[in-house]
Image 1 (cartoon, rainbow, N blue to C red):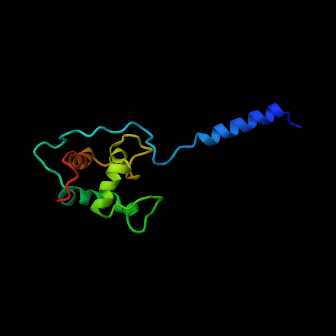
Image 2 (image 1 turned 30 degrees about the vertical axis):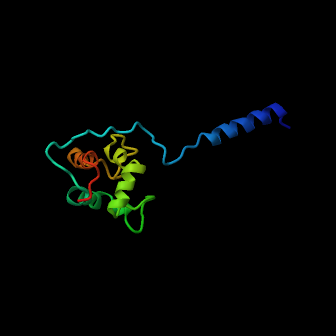
Image 3 (image 1 turned 135 degrees about the vertical axis):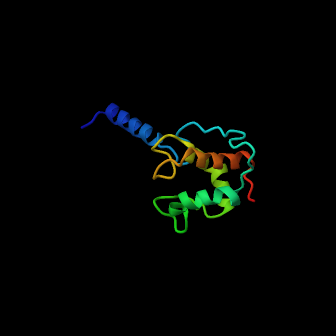
Length: 127
């Protein structure tokens, strides 16, 4: 039979372990700071510059239906803006952490990431 002290310690240990679980929405690394003008002389828009990037790199999992455990669609301008503003989309594509980068197939070329960054810096313009 276990002593009351052992049971108490085991219970406390279990509570501490369970309380350490994090949310999938909490950032796992520092937020990437957006350069105020990553592509000087260009005003990037969703329609002209970003939609093609999203369609080529994200829709496979973030389309309809969602695939590979994706939790949000990236089919429309509004969905992509929401992902930038509320779900850390830019952090996920700009990170150099291979365990957190999107797309899962590997980090996009820096020039592609710069276009998305320029779009954000230019105010998330649709057209």
